[in-house]
Image 1 (cartoon, rainbow, N blue to C red):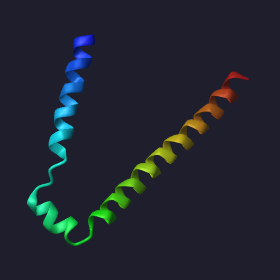
Image 2: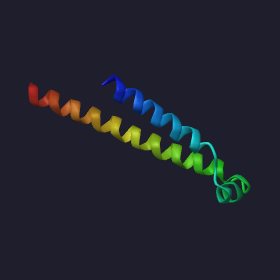
Image 3: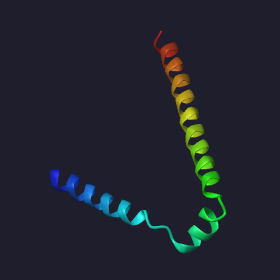
Length: 70
């Protein structure tokens, strides 16, 4: 198990190191036009929305389970 975790960490490290280099078309279109910030904000809003939805579903499920157990 330890070797698997070590392999996974090395794999993720190499992927992260390569992910820092943006392709030239990405630099021209998003970074150059100032659109990258908008993309990051939209993705963040989507992730926060999904997280809030999951949290609300969990609360509803807990309430239903409490009703069933009573």
